[in-house]
Image 1 (cartoon, rainbow, N blue to C red):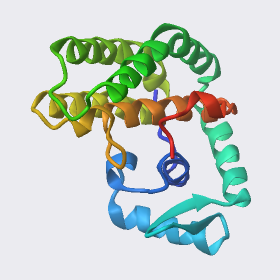
Image 2 (image 1 turned 30 degrees about the vertical axis):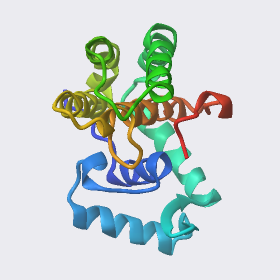
Image 3 (image 1 turned 180 degrees about the vertical axis):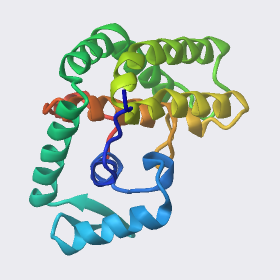
Image 4 (image 1 turned 60 degrees about the vertical axis):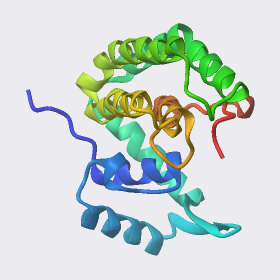
Length: 203
């Protein structure tokens, strides 16, 4: 059986929705192709540039959100992954998400500029292993989800090497950023939204 592959347009629009940027690190496609897709989306009125002070971000317009919903629904149906996604999302939310949110929140409220305790790193390691196990059935049907456990593991290794930004830093694929983007990706692929109060990590 041929392995399912999500179309580049979906990967690009979803990256813009999740992070306000589209890059090879998230999409795992050639940079030239990503840039062409972004330009096409801008020309068709699906993406616009928004300025926040001195920074700029690409965001989806109403047309962009509508197109992304269509692509996500088609992708899910083509991979026959609806039931797998529901099960994985339930396991994620009921099994490991609350602990991750609590652990990172406690770390942020404590002293994030100091060396993290070994207990925190060990907990993040355990959660990373659990994440890989939870996501595996979905990644087998929708391979685009396979990047999240891998990027979480890379961020944790960097944190263990002493760069504390990789625990919960903003603007990089830190453990917390990867986790938050995964949660939103799971929900939006299923056609659901996160409640505002449950997403303090997002801008």
